[in-house]
Image (spheres, rainbow, N blue to C red):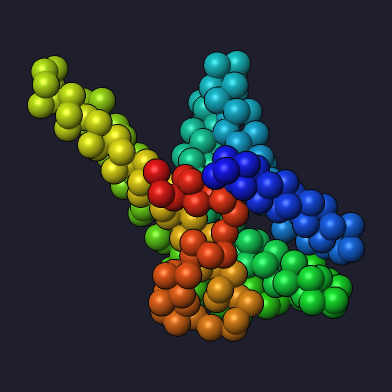
Length: 209
């Protein structure tokens, strides 16, 4: 029954997604903007790497290295904030669409800017907790052979997955809670206790794992 319920929740979520986009195409624009931002810097990195192998000019090599470093820093330290900003705008657009008001893309961005400090805090948590999850999973593969090493490796791997899945779910809950209810992250935190009642079953499985 749990698997069937999770599947039904996921189908219902997808159905509502297409309904919202059909009613107000502006709801899709923040996602497109995220893709364009991320893809642009990824392409810049690839072109710059190719330039290192193709060009023999010292100036071109220097510019290519600079672009690679800047692109890496952007994707690692800036893009999480950009992503959170566009998600905040999308939350407001989707909420208003469900409420019967088709607001514009610019209105969504304007609403997101009102919670700029919450977006900064959530973006910072996103960087730190994802880095922690990655470190735990990497450490799980560096344990010594043997019984205790294997047990510790499994524990670290599970901890890494728990941090990753737990933050993914909590982060996707805190942002809408802040934007839609027009409150800050600190005010939204107590509502995490209701998270199990407000997310699809498919997401809950990942969280509880």
